[in-house]
Length: 433
Image (tube, rainbow, N blue to C red; front, side, top):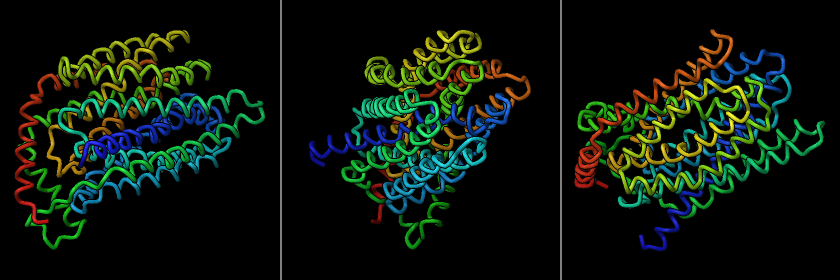
């Protein structure tokens, strides 16, 4: 690939973050949680709406976790990472558009459509992430991943701002309609801005081992998964990293999914809860780039550990939320670390796996992320139901950040990268395509 095509592919790849992050902001984090709590769950108690939202999120993440590894291995064998990604994009766009149909009291319908949208969003991300090691050079992968997150914050923030203007400045009798229309704008934005990736990012080369000749994709996927589990001891450092990520992403994911509805439960206005999220989108842009730069200076692992220390302080502060200004301040703190922690986790993982198995391995990465996402919201919801409120739920996140950080500290990233490079050379040498 020449340099012009390489840069075009990177721009197109990062543009998908711009495209799908509107689901993360308007749907998962800002507008839908408030609509779900105040309109779709109109006849429920506030803490019941919060726990139902937590359980809905859990179901969506579990379904993706179960499908991810099988589909990832199938995509690697078939040479169809982009094709699988496209299928999930269509599923996600469809589920998001269907949210337009949700009206007062339709909390169950909202849950079903949100689950469909979430499956599409999370499933597409598996294959999107798996393209990263193929389009970015070794010396730029941290910066490309961080740039993707920065683009995501910009795109997600811009459309969220447009949606908020639609909702907050419309006459009272049109507020519900404008909210539902905002769900449609997300589906259109997501679809349209995926086009550059479809046009400019090539399907990575397909690699088939001699032992897989004559296999169909389903048989090959189970064969590859079986071999990966048998050979997992080869990837000791990668395994430690996945478990560490599983732990600390519990906390990160729960903050992302539950912050807005937690603020709503505490009685904070929608101006504060959604306004804070909008602020996070734009404040996070320079900090995502900053963490990409910081990774070059102090190392990727140390940069992630710094972000986890800040997250621990945020979780402590979350217990003491009593005034709306506190919510704004914690939101600013989240903005400083949210993009950097996730972007560098994605790129560090990409270095410690063989490129030819990127979809399969990123599906395992996604599984760890989704399992993490299920435990955090589930615990949040259970504690909220038992205690009749969610303050103690936020405190539990400290456990995830501290344990994840301790295990990450023990990961020898250079050893993990060397093992991945050696395995990739073996796969290339044994390729029969």
